Image (cartoon, rainbow, N blue to C red; front, side, top):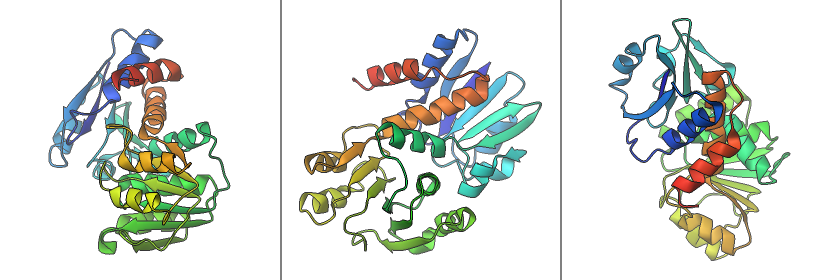
Length: 271
């Protein structure tokens, strides 16, 4: 059986390492997993080319929203979030799922961060921010604010908040109206949140806990500043690991070998 991760850019993806490690541990010697460069324009043709020998696809930027109209079935969580990071081929149909949200919840709880959460500040307004919103909602967050550069481009995030029943406040990216959130979640690329690192180092914006979705290069400037300030820090690798484990379970029908996947991923990242 074949599976793959699609996105653009995709060369950096750790997903092949994680999924191949799972196949080895499960004894699925006839399974393969590759990384395929794919943008929104190429996605319909690539999906059409996935025949009976394909088990499923992992999706990353910029495909998690674009794939939704191309699915036959979409699970309730993916519909609420407005993003599917997983496509499973079943009986000639395309089934869309979101494993980002449970992956994020597991990564947080694994680090001892459990609900109910207090004030949450999410940095960014893209598909990952939508998943972060659903994750903190699942952990009982009472107050969620999103720091975005352009509120006009946060319509998908606001729509996800309405579907989830979350009261979401938008604030300035550079001067967020939250000084000391219980949890700060950065969903932006490495370096884009450096202004938060500067403020945190100066004692101006210090959360109790930080989730930075970046896993390479690690640690980010923000994670280093948070660690020095005594903040509990969760990196992007645990989130990536657990969302991949969810994908393995969906595609193979078997329980994912999380520890084998974790060891392979950490080895690829140099520990």
